[in-house]
Image (tube, rainbow, N blue to C red; front, side, top):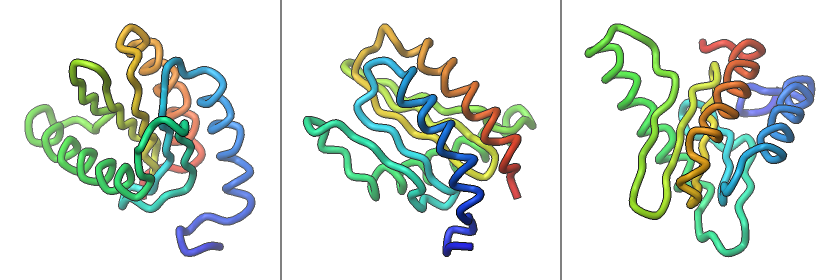
Length: 132
């Protein structure tokens, strides 16, 4: 068991989900899988994107923590995802059990398609790795 609390068997369970994401997401420039405290499990970014894996991990942890507290306070519900959108791009943070899937993308027209793909992967990862 590694310092992130995941071992080789866990990595074997996560690999197909990361492959599913990389094969199906559209217009995504950065993809990260993090623990809920921001530790990187997997990260991929195209060369033209200057996204830093540590920065994305920190932002993922901060955004999801804030969004979780907000959803509990306002709706007494668990967080599914948080979407942050600007004029030329967006970030999506999906809760996946004890992990967070984070993407950065610039193809706004693909946002809802990508959210659907993230929901499928997050549900499967969350089933295999429930929140602690």
